[in-house]
Length: 116
Image (cartoon, rainbow, N blue to C red):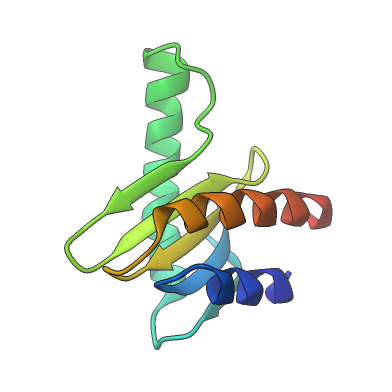
């Protein structure tokens, strides 16, 4: 799994970390090219994945969340569900490429699904 995450960070312009997280907030595996707390990133974004899933699936009748992108002033995160219990997190800087994140992230999530 680590090799898939490492390759994802290398493939996406502006990416500096990739991780597999559980919706329970626990880090399963991760790779960071920068000094960062992947446990904290996964824990915070697991809550957002749960909340968006509840909002779309239960409240809005929109079905399952297929991807989630959040952009702040200095940090962007692309989230993609892998299974019903795990998600892929890709952290990027201000010069990130969302198109690459979506393309390579989706492909990585499908490869990782077979391993989980």
